[in-house]
Length: 66
Ligand SMILES: [Zn+2]
Image (cartoon, rainbow, N blue to C red; front, side, top):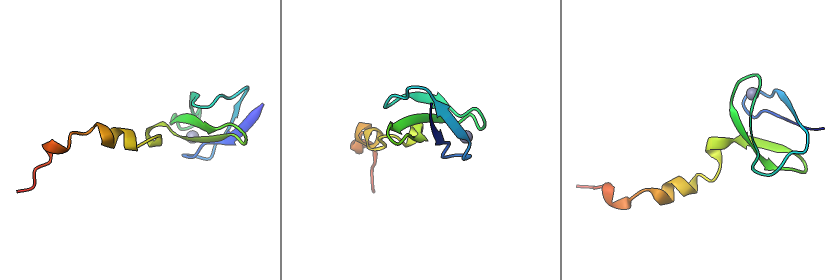
């Protein structure tokens, strides 16, 4: 059993056979988490993952500066 801690509430989370990119929910604070590193096990907020993707999807033309 591999263990890590919730980045939101520091609750200890145990995962059997964690996989990179695996999604889980903290059983204490219900925050959605993602496995960002397996050895050692590290968890991060799902919405914090690859934030540049959303920036790239934005249409720059919609921002007008008069
Ligand atoms: Zn938590």
